Length: 460
Ligand code: PLP
Image (cartoon, rainbow, N blue to C red):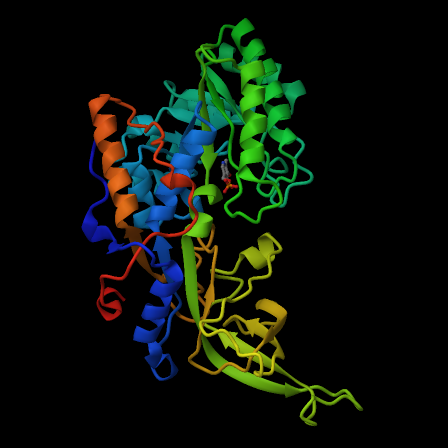
């Protein structure tokens, strides 16, 4: 198995240190923010990703995880997941190129975009990427011409009307149209090997997975009847990335395991995959964003005074990142990002109604409103946690910033666990390289076990 990640890719930290500590050191190192350019920067705990992976394997032992590249394609993430033996789910040529560039073999890539450009289908064919998804007849026609040896996975729709981010509005074929599509594929000599679905991100009901697995079983039967060799079931994504999610990962895993036992029992010869994005990376990343401008606004409220007798006021803070950049979750996921203050305010410190705004010169670039914060200053850093999913690559063009810098860290414990898993995979001569869970118990602790052995200035 290839070595994708090396010790030079991250800062090795010891027991008892947290990403918060790391951020604090880095923001101190960058405290010339008031006078200099002060771009937002991320800190990523790669050990948290390793831990999530082991936990996934423990909870869903029959499911082979693929990572959804568009969720966060930063090099540290791709390398650590490659090292763990994951497959990769790509939506376009750029993503396929990216993962192949770090050495991922074609056999570990799924081109999971049901509606593809012909040139990109040809690219997949040229690069040996065989597994492609589809949900319509036009796509079959393209594949016949451009990638006749492709192995197609039929993407089925589901009722995701309660999910925060719906995919079935755009992708997926209803159950009633599946037979027709499978027949068309057969007539065109296109090989259909399986079924995929996506319950949508932020799905409030784990039973949605059970329903889709039951539907997939029906489609497997139709496919087999028509002579397709159906052997891939792709459970899609939608697994939560944080502890505080409405539905817990364990609940989803339990529903999936029961449904798999019922509809795709062990030994049935079906390869079960999932395409995970936010599960792996959300909580591993925190971002520090600096205040670039500040405005004090007196509120015109006759008769209302602050405790000290002054007129009530609110503070408007401008940041170097906004909703068109790394805070796009405000627009798409309806999330209100709340900063973690580097210094906890004292009991005596007054709190003021405050709002945070991005750099775009428009009234929509509001990151958060209605926050109660102590008075902050230009050059202060605000830290936001759980910023790993769908934020990178979105660094705001309005502030003229480049992609945000990322400092990767990993605890020695995590690094050693990763090395042990690599050795175990090699010993098993596991050509797929997907690891079996280590039962050291380490993967279920939630704190980052790390310690500073670096100079912040040298890693910024
Ligand atoms: N699979 C497909 C086809 C997707 O489009 C996405 C995200 O949009 C995912 C998986 C990952 O979803 P999540 O980040 O919720 O796991």
